[in-house]
Length: 191
Length: 72
Image (cartoon, rainbow over all chains, first blue to last red; front, side):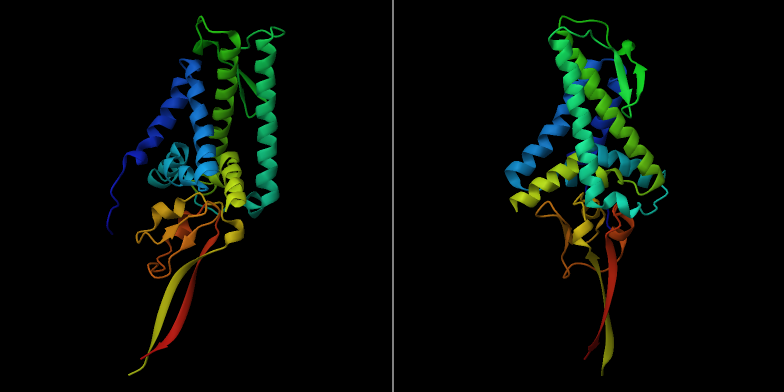
């Protein structure tokens, strides 16, 4: 069978991997993860499509690489309730609530009623000490707090994605990815 | 002479499609697209019913349909 020609965007999984690795050394780079939030939203609002998910999602490519090329996935069907709208939109609401909670923690640091917490919250429950990724800077503490919070969001979603990649099909994360659900919802409204 | 012509093609259950585009990359005939960002659409002229999209679809919303027609 003919092999498809690779494009530059087929290697965006490298950036996704680097992002997760750099978070162990310098948490401030977590701010770059905003790209993965803002770009798909902007594309769906402006163009009314999911080309970000289809072509440019480095995380999806990474799961594809691990699950399909490296054969780490069981390639089983995902339970049907996960693909239902109530689960997908429910998970989106839960995700946004947790995101709002993270923004509130950042706000508390911003107004000075809370100190900087150098922890990463995994799966919204496990507080992991992450002081090794921050050695001080001239930046406001809230900027650093947001980086810790955002990296928590990215790490949690990556871990969930890896678990479902192993258990089901490589890109099972895409079924309940909050960004995918949100951009699909925007496209439904637009089209 | 008459014969039976069998046509296989992929069908997407639009209601549960998440529009992730895994099938787009997998399709060797470039027969699938997600133009509206909501669900995948299969170009039946291009689709050969190989089933690669069925295997990769994370939501398991694609299946292969077989139509057989009398052909002259």
